[in-house]
Image 1: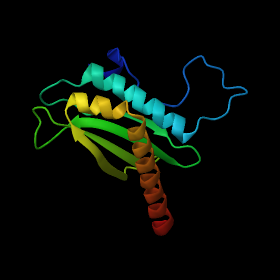
Image 2: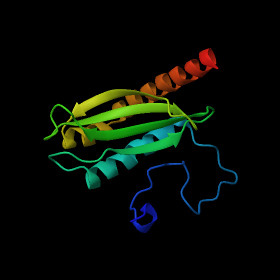
Image 3: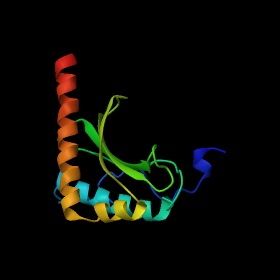
Image 4: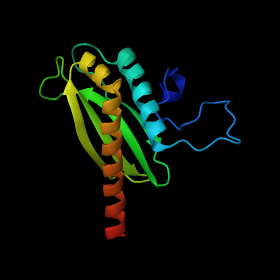
Length: 146
């Protein structure tokens, strides 16, 4: 069965605008607002798609970082050491059109702890700081090597 045959509930790529919303006379969204929306969307996905116990497929939300050629991705996956109830939150950045990914684990806990972390404004600040650092790392790599 092809992917197109499935009715997907969530779009894993968040582009910053809702369908049908006019873009005229609107300010472009900042990295702060995009990160807050990313945390909100990922929290909803964790609620719906992550089981309390056991292994599951990694889920993620991605957005284009304003004023760069990079994208940010925040994902939740089961912990490899403790897959029964351990979950990990990973922040990544990569260059658009590249397969080089720079990532960092920022939190480890149960499903409930991951949800609490995603809904905390201080956590969103930490995720934002990590996204900026990883994006800068990606930019530096391409400046130095190409």
